[in-house]
Amino acid sequence: MVHTVIFAGGTGTRMSTSSIPKQFIEVDGIPIIIRTVEHFAKHPMVDDIVIVSIESGIELMNRLLEDYKVPKVKSVIPGGETGYESIHRGLLEVSKDAAPDDIVLICDGVRPIISEKTITDCIELAKEKGSAVPVVQCIDSVLFSTDGKTCDSNYPRQQMFTTQAPQGYTMEKILWAHDQVDAGRDADLTSSADLLISLGETVNMFYGERDNIKVTTPEDLHALRSHYYYEHYKNFAREEKEE
Image 1: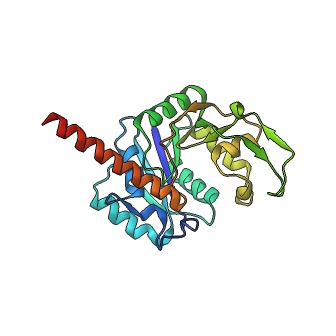
Image 2: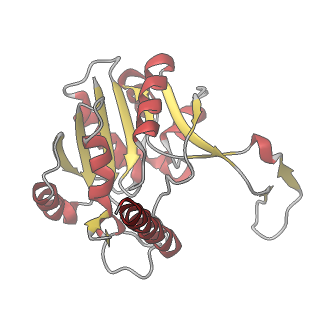
């Protein structure tokens, strides 16, 4: 089976222009979290979904799921104080009905443009190798600095990659990783891939898509709105041509 954990426990502190958590912001009339969840709910290989929500948003989350008639959501549970804790809670909820070799996809709730292909590629590689992390190659030069002011080293751009989501793992592997550490390590870990690498594991990568943005800042929100504006324009132009 293929399970999905979507964590939406953030308050959106970097979305400085918003008065509500970023996952509930509407873009083109639909909340970002609903757009994200629907990609997994509609995917034929995904069996069920657990949403880990900011506790104050659980009632709203359940209402949105009902209003938009989103299938496959098994439960909505409260998150922890950190992203690590929220993911851990989601994994424990999934593990109640999962086998060790089942696949679990882990995704933040603010990736509303995930393609079906990215989800499929993630599932297939995770089944084959036990882990799957979508990446895109860096197109800018990367410098390393310990103080944010000076730099005395850089990295070859062609060897640098940015991770995306969803990330896929066998239940056995990711639960093992979480059992090795406690929530206090969250400050040093920004993704499940970081967690496994910190434990000496190798993760398997596949090429994702640059459109698969994570909506974190006001600039990301502008880019997302532009995406849907362009989609409307394409549809309009196609309809005009057909007529």
